Length: 444
Image 1 (cartoon, rainbow, N blue to C red):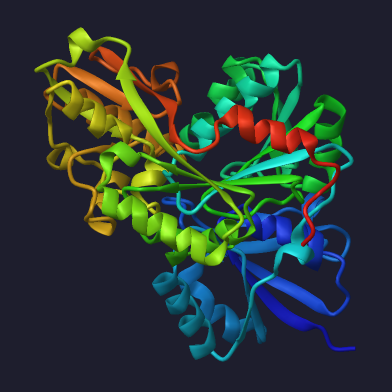
Image 2: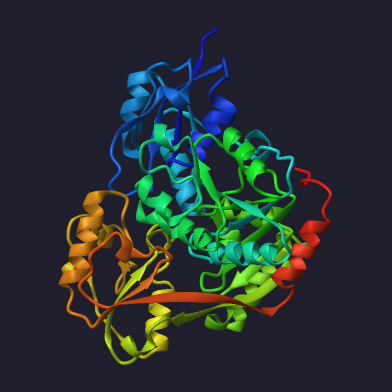
């Protein structure tokens, strides 16, 4: 039997999971390459045999998405499987057109094909777009469960930016573990807050093994989503977070709209920063596609740990990189905090070096903030150089990662944090009551 030659488009997360679950042992297909996008500065490499298995003894090469036409010609590719999130429908349409124009069929694997079942209760937190406040909601849920004596094992959507072979199954229990595995800034941003609560976080590449370890560690499993992807584990209860500052993303992104349609509850964040018309429109959009979901209106109230270093001072604002890059937000909590405390925000663009010059060109909506880009040692070096060269009184850091642990910054550091305040609708406690009353996973 002739095997269908397939390419998988992704970003080192969903793509590897889909391969492991649906393609790795499929006798009818041969995956000839992975194509990565969304990860600045990550070049060509190879997915190792330790993960790809006996069918692929030499591993599988990883290339950039712009190499698709050459790969199709070289390998005779017939089908492209999209395993990527955080896309607007316009971006999704462009990828579909790109794939079809080089002569390939286009495919997306759905929920039933890619979800794993757990023997433990699973609660999933997903989003409609990066930067909506998903991680904050996850931490509040963990605290609520802890207050009830329930131990949660947090399983994070994969972020495979380093050595894939060393990332098959990773269990983090302390901040020191982050240094041991030499994690990127982007990974630290998601893991540090949970670890500071004393909660184990699991992630990696092989989620068929990760789910077993999570079941051993926790009374319940909390799926902490990445980008706006749907969960790898079939949830008993599903919460999606959307952002009132970006109305229409709840029905204008893929697979963000999938999450809205499937959710038991939708939390609309940053409502005090948006107009009432925007919030109403978001609620109406949610009601049209998921009339049974609980809707929670909430605020993410920002605060700083050293206000005396911010009030009427000149500050550099460092924001979570995914939020302001492929999340398409012009700014985040750092900018809001600077405005709240009447600080002068120093424009960093003229100080940009290395990859940061490319970032400001690629994402022109980023104007007055510095993305916390740190996928590689070189990027960290350029970030440190920028922050040290900018003439300012302080650095306002609005990423959960404590950058001073990995960078030598020559200015005072001010940390931005934010608290969830429910303005209208069920509280997190109410949602957890409903979750804990469930007797099994959602029907999909």
